[in-house]
Length: 324
Image (cartoon, rainbow, N blue to C red; front, side, top):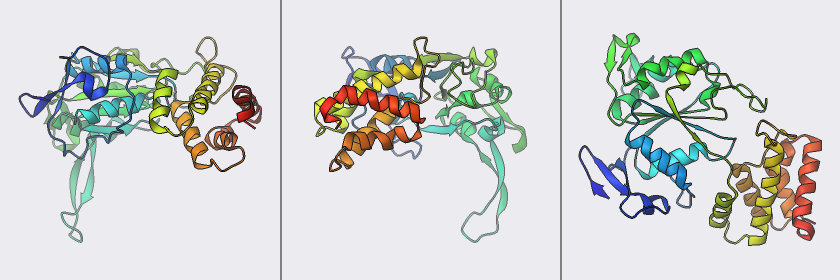
């Protein structure tokens, strides 16, 4: 690490994220490792090189932009962000949006607070994740942001243009954005609604709001899946790991369809589900049909009967005698 001013340091890009880049490439982060808002990291996490490089550019110089990561469920949108920020000791204020979320939920609210247990409470203003991130130079991470009401989300427009936050309900408190303050969002759409009908609750967002975001796309990646399974389940035979990935690829194609707007089934084998399948297969390795039993618990029991039958047939074709 190379120390800089204001508690910042430069981390070597290649060794920090185990990606192939030029030896002198660095990425900015914090020296302090004690902040409770620093995300926890997974030592075996596998990074996508392109995603790291694009996110690094945003962190270094947002130029008035926010960062929007889109992709199918369980493809690594949130984990990719938090794993990077965790290694940079960059604190994160993380929330998950929903249809009833209001801008005031991000700014803060008044609450009765006791200074010590048993003491008489007094009314105090409690800063929300947006106010805390702006004040202290944290990243505000809003997951599932496309589920938020577009009229409420547009309230962030001034903030994204580097203007101060004025909290009228706290006697007009003014918070100027910290130089290290960043806004990052994730969503299953790109603000245009959900044409597939698979992601319930997604709203079409205001075009003026979306114009303030850089967009990164994260999709399922079989090569990354292979590295993840190898690192997490080294004792699982390679032939079984590869078979699981093969099944996952077929299921994803059925889920996404040829045009990517929704296919013939309503469930998918995300990377999250793939890891769950491998975990359960290892846990129940004494079961006479451990592969099938693990897949049932990981995915099939929440699929429609005809979908479960189709996925089971795919797995049977892929694994052959191993399936039985």
